[in-house]
Amino acid sequence: MRHRNILLLVANGAHARILRRDAESGELHTVVRLEDGPAARDGHAPYTPDQRSTRSEAYAKVILAQVADVLRQHPAEGVIVSAPAHLMHALHEPLGHLCKVIASTQKDLVKLADHDLKAQLASELNHADLGFA
Image (cartoon, rainbow, N blue to C red):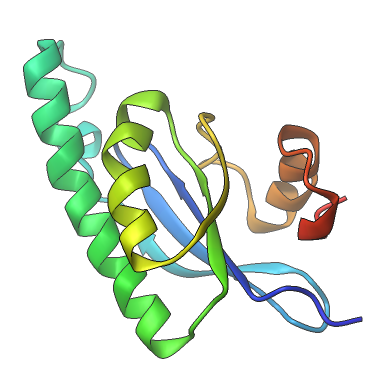
């Protein structure tokens, strides 16, 4: 069975991963890993809402550049996004200009292993056509 050609973006304030799904097996594999988000550099220092928004928008631009690079090398029909609300806000609209955002969840799933993401997405997203069930 061939699986849909979908990218997965999981991110938080410190880390991000871009994963591709193998067309034959359906397994997810990380193709890009970012470890340099503002929270990784600054720890969990208290931010004002404006500082947090500025930092999230700057990190979102770094992430979006990486997504664009992956899409140039491996075109996909769309992307599923998983990120906390503060980062999702900075990612969702600009990401929609790069490709179709098929589904999203405001969860921090960045620490889950590639093979555990599939099961977690099946419970988070109610999209049978995505093939994560």
